[in-house]
Length: 174
Image (cartoon, rainbow, N blue to C red):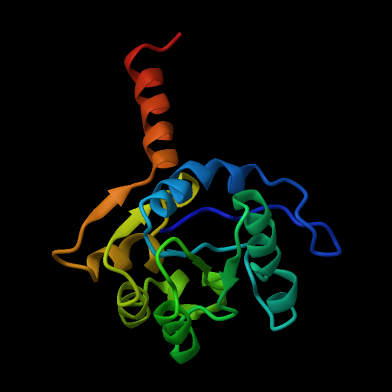
């Protein structure tokens, strides 16, 4: 599931505003209630240097999401690779794994198809619940679903709600 966990952090790395995390909870809970094995992917900020790897890690988001869900959210610490593959393989039904910041991999911003294929290979279904990034051509938004021909691709509940609000504004502006 592509989510938008691009939350503001303070200087110590603490989440200042969790609204984006909370907004994705209905979609996340929907998968977990149906005993799905859920892999979450998101970006955080615009990392430019090696120093940004600690400052813009999604590790604090995994901790906060664990508290909000009332269950452990495993954190991969990487975006793709052997350790991620192993972590996905250990997921049991009803469990969650959050990948590290997608923008730590250069293939995310460039829309790299090999990077996208590695991400796509982790899942059977692609769910977009990241309304705030739908306009981007990032690998996780465009190339990952393209790398899953024949697999279901769905909109999450947050994305569906945002589109419904927009349709209402366009159809009946006040």
